[in-house]
Image (cartoon, rainbow, N blue to C red; front, side):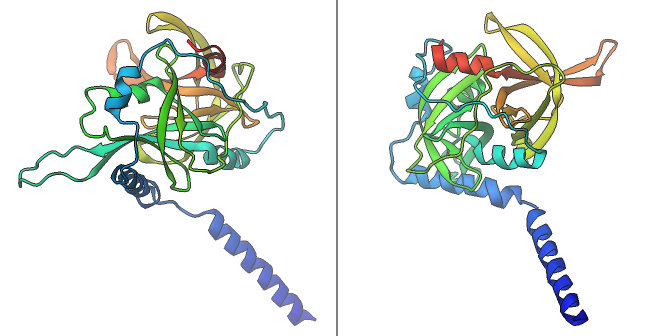
Length: 302
C-alpha cells in the first residue's frame, strides 16, 4: 500500500513539474518572432500576390476624410480576470504590424542587398474578420518618403507566427493617432478584443501587451494616472496617462482594463526633466488615446 502511495505521489509531482516547465517557457524573441516575420514577409513579396505597397497606399493616405467603418463590435466584458488570464486573452489578439521590403542597395562589395527589412510596431484585432487597430504614425511611417527600404508590403503577424498582408487602410485619424486596417485573414477565424464603451477613471488598473524594442509580447501593468486634453494636429483631443510601461515598438498596442476590454491605445511617451538640469529625468509621461476616440472613428468617421 505504501509503495503504491509513493508511486502516486511521484506521478503527481512529475505532472506538476512538467506543467511548470511548460508554463515557464522562455521565448526567443529572434527565432520565435523576428525570423518568422522576415521569412513570412519575404514569402508574401516573392509570391507575386497583389500587395498594398507604400507607393500604392500613399496617394490615398490622409489625415482625415474617412467614412465610418462597417463592422460589428462585440459587447463589453463584465467579469474580472486575473492578470494571467488577461495576458493569455490579450496576447492572442495582439499582433505585430510591420512594413517589409528589400532596399536593393549595392554594398561596398558590389553586391545587391537582398535582405528583408522590417520595422515592427504593435496593433490589436477588434473583429474576427481581420480588422486591426494601430497608430496613425505607424501607417505614416510606412508611406513616408523617409522609408527607403521597406516599401514592398505592409504585414501583420499573429502570435503563432502567421504573417498576413494588410489589404486596405479603412480609416485614419492624425489628431487621435489612430489607424484601422483590414488584413487578408486567409480563411482564419481570428481572436479579437472588445472595446469599452465608457471611459476609464483615474486609479483604474490597466494592462498592456506590446513589443517594446523587439521584446515581443511583453506584459506590463499599472493604473490610469491622469486624464487631460491637449492640442494635436491643430485640434484638441482627450488623452489618458497611465503608469504601465511601454516603449518604441509598443506603438498601437491596446490598453486593457481588468475585464479584458480595450480602454485605450498607446500613442507616445514624453520624458519630463528637471527645469534646472535637463540631463536629469524625473519621470516619463506615458500617453494613450481613450477608447471613445476609436469608437467615434469607427461609427462616425472623421
